[in-house]
Length: 269
Ligand SMILES: [Zn+2]
Image (cartoon, rainbow, N blue to C red):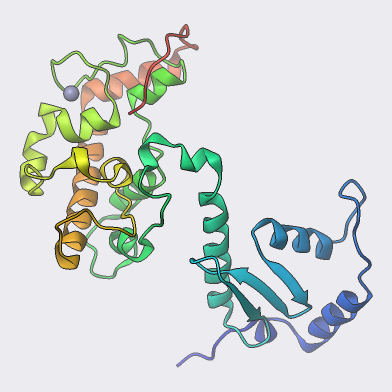
């Protein structure tokens, strides 16, 4: 078994001693517009993400429930410290007003089940290909570049934003592509989602494949985990299929060549 890699193991002893020496001599940084040392920058960042740097080797960070936990560089495994740092940063980002008001992330504000949400991405049992994992990352980040979003960004016109996969003539939003477009009916069948009541499920799940901490009602934990995986696989296949059609590629090629379209507004549901 490989030895645990701690900060102490990664830094040679003189460096640890130097850090301790500088920490003890560090003056208080009072003004942000003055030139500050790397220590001051790191202290400021720690506070920005809700933490406190108590001593040269101790940083306190909020856990997923917001409870402060002390972490000692000298004894903590480096990978564990990175995990605690990620949790604190995620927590901070999820408190931002931009996240709380996002249409496609409703339901995620009360907490995300990260283990379940990332299962297909990280599990050794996942059968997703490299490309499919990339698509899933884009989905989970809420970054699928749909025609409705291109319209909202004034990149294309209303006519150009119509769904090219069916003859319904409506704007191709995420909601239309995933849950209404008849072109993907066979994929909904394949992933057993025809009976899924997407309209009453959290939107972070139905648009971005994110599992909130609270499952949809009347679903057992096992069914909930299965449902989330089905939804994610379905989303990956729909987006993959949609971007591979000739019509969609023509639409995207037009976008990359075109100049800014006149502002016409639009939703990106
Ligand atoms: Zn359609």
